[in-house]
Figure (cartoon, helix red, strand yellow):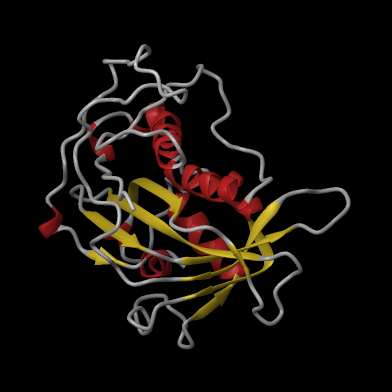
Length: 258
């Protein structure tokens, strides 16, 4: 399986102006277009909505990564079911903000994420104030039905490649996440909605084989696979020095902001 290489350094350029562009381009390359060793960057029309309808688990992951990268809590909230549960890795238990039993529910998930995405939120340990977030998600295998007790009818499960870099406001320090969390997606199940939402997520430990960080060598073209529309004005970003970046699971980072 091809593992895409991803570069994260949002403080090198105006993040909000290009967040939607970068996330959409990365998603297009991960979900079908062949880009070799390059990351494709698709530049949509100026006012194009970066979010997809919640009509599939894949779209839920796309919107999850987009809401994190754009720090958009309003679009994150609808992705989570009221009975959502997040299960931390054993390594995270005992860490800052992690519940003693290693499990939290919807209210904790929403609170922690809202704090992390809020550009004005200052945590108790102020050095963790967030400047920018970049996240990318891609299913790593076909989804399967689950027989997990209590799962809503039609629930599907699958692991995803998760790469995230959180750049902190103080000194530009970074928190790095690379892992394979297990997601459970449940259909809304009502006659008036075809939406999918997250029902469960089981965190995974840091894994340095996931989503290697590198530079963009050049855009690979637009979603149709052509190279005719390459935009050479897209900024190039330098790689970060991985040896100096603390490694976390996704849950361990979220728990800091609970």
